[in-house]
Every structure is written in C-alpha cells, then in structure tokens.
Image (cartoon, rainbow, N blue to C red):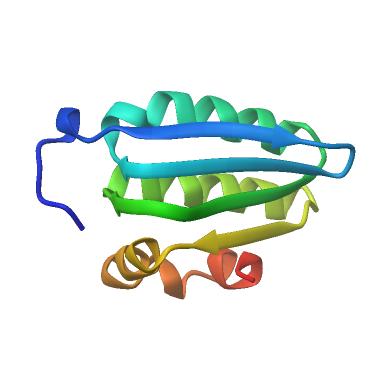
Length: 112
C-alpha cells in the first residue's frame, strides 16, 4: 500500500457494459479521493442485474477505503445472485493479502 495522505491519491474509474456484463475499471492510485465516483459506479453495476466485472489490473496502489467499497460491492452482488469476476494487479492482490481481504469468502468466490 502507498503511504500518502488520502486526498493525494487519485484514480481513474470508468465503466463499460453490454447486455450481460457491467465492467468497472479502476486505474492508478486509488484512495479516498476516488471513492465517491467508484461507489456510484459500483452501485449502478450491482443494481443493473448484470454480471459484475471488477477490472483492477492497472491499480498501482490502493487504500483501505477502496478495499471496503469493493468488498461491499462483491457482497451485494453475491447476495443478489450476480456473478463476479475480479481481475487484480499484483499491487491490488498484495493490498488484499496485507489487509486480510483475500481471506473473505465473498472475495474468494468472486475471484477468477
């Protein structure tokens, strides 16, 4: 994880979708500064009824606020019966391991 002040961390969040999938892409250094936009995209994705794809392959650093948002989205998608695909960069996977999020059943079930 990157040790900087939360308001200094910015990431790019975007969404693509088709009839079957809602793809949320996150790139860069993800922290509190990008949490509101990411939350909006995740809520739209979960409520879309489509399969949720979390493309985090280009995440360079992440803080706990983003991991909490992602976990909540995976949990909600799982509860609603949606399928989840998680594509994580090494930095993202390391942050998940270091914070214990990789041991949660919701992550394990959704990770491909």
